[in-house]
Image (cartoon, rainbow, N blue to C red):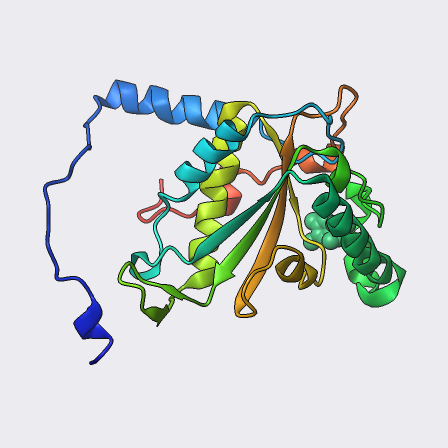
Length: 233
Ligand code: IYR
C-alpha cells in the first residue's frame, strides 16, 4: 500500500467561522492587538506563584491551531510542573551554559549577548511554575496510526510557538524563550523519541515583583526597516 492511499480524501467544507469586519473595526482590532503584543517582554525573573494547569492547557490548544506542513502538526509540548524534573533541567542547562559562556559561544556571540546581561545561572528553571519544552517531530503518527514523515517542521513549530507566546501573554502570563545550547538533554528528561528535535524551552508564570528587562530589549526596528511595500508609498 502506498503512503498516499492512506491519506484521507479531499473533502472541502464551507469556511466555518470567518466573520468580515467593517474597516473601522479592522483598524481598531489591528491596533488593539499591536498595543497588546507590544507589552510582551521576555523576562528572566519569575515568581514561584502557581498558575493553574487549565490556563496552560487552553494556551496550548491555541498553539495547536497553528498552520503546519500538510497539517501534520509536527509539534509536541512537554509541560513540566514537576519539581524534580525542573531541578534536573536546571542542572543540565546550567552545565551546557557554563561551557557556552566559558568559550564555546565565541567572542562575537558573547559580545552580542552583553546588552542582555545573561550568564550561566538559570534559577528561573526551578522557580517558574511551568516549563514548556517544545519539540519538533520529524516523523509522527497519522490519525490511522501510520508513522509518516513530516514537512516544514521548524517553520511549523515556530509558528505554533508564536501562537503559544501570544496566548500566554493574552492570558496575563510572562514568558522567556530559553535556548540552552545544545538542548539534547530535554528529550531524555522528557522521555521523547530519539527522532524528536528540541527547539525551545518556554518558561512561563508570573513575573517576580522586582523583575527587570534589559533596556536593549525595548529597541525594536521601525516598520520602514522591517518591511518593503510594492508599490511603494
Ligand atoms: N543560551 C544562552 C545564551 C543566549 C543566547 C541568545 I541568541 C540569547 O538571545 C540569549 C541567551 C542563555 O540562555 O544564556
